[in-house]
View (cartoon, one colour):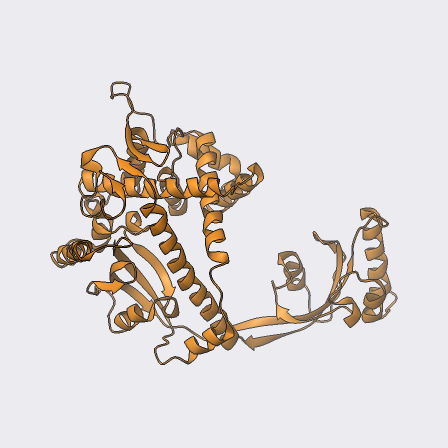
Length: 447
């Protein structure tokens, strides 16, 4: 299976709801009865859930087990992830965030397509791993719920103005290009006193010492980081430099690939960054097309069959009787944005009007008229008028700057939200060896 499928199984295993079936094969009957390892508000996390999630992580690192920390540390990391996921699902349910079976079906189809499988083949792979497909659906549903919680939290809290984009692009600290980063985060709980801050800093310095002593950065992230990407080795993937907080970007700009930063103090804790690789941005030249269209829509007065026949009649009048396309568009097209312009769609990137129209235009030569074809909107006739190469570097740069500002703000807003969510929750880790003694008291974990 492709890595994306394995990663999904890992992600789903680490967010199991209470009483859900497990993804890994069932434990032998000789093992002790299940027990509760943590209480999260009015919910519980079972030993079987933790065991299953740990096994999923171990399977993810098959062949690289040297990167995994000792079992007790790995269990603490996985349990922290389970607790945080459970809190988010609970909060989403409290806010009546729901998803439908159709939403889950669509997500499953997307996962299958990403792995070049049909939904039926994906189901077979899940069951081949020893898992219940019904459980897989429930877990995927929870993941969708949490995504919607994230959207609801940040959508009203993040706004971006043109002035912010201008300021970013004109700032002397603005740096173009992209970097591939590794990340270790040692959080400082909200309202922490000097002793708690010192404890977090000491843990960050311990992580740096381990890396300097030869520990692989990914292994150090799994062992020390409390960021959401810890179990993936702290890999942040490729990010534009303008997506990174300026204080960190300045540090990264002076680093070479392979170097690791000192512990950097941020709003939520200490951060250790590794510059894995970097690349420069290039000019963005795209092909734009000029076209016009006639759209015939079915309605209460026009059946689908009648709409198709009218489109074919208009095509015949344009191609065989040489009637004027623009005139017929003004008289017949039901597209509100182009009809009064004689169907003129202007200049646009090929997929700007959707994949169906983009595909048809890609098959036409300049001045050629398409056969009538159907989309969700109705029946179309297109005429491709021309094509050109357009330098979109400035516009794309502004779009990327807008996205970078939004990403940065969203991450900060949701990170603060999760910290508050955890600090205000009742979390009782019942198994002493699973307690993170460095942070549990300050993070609101009950003794």
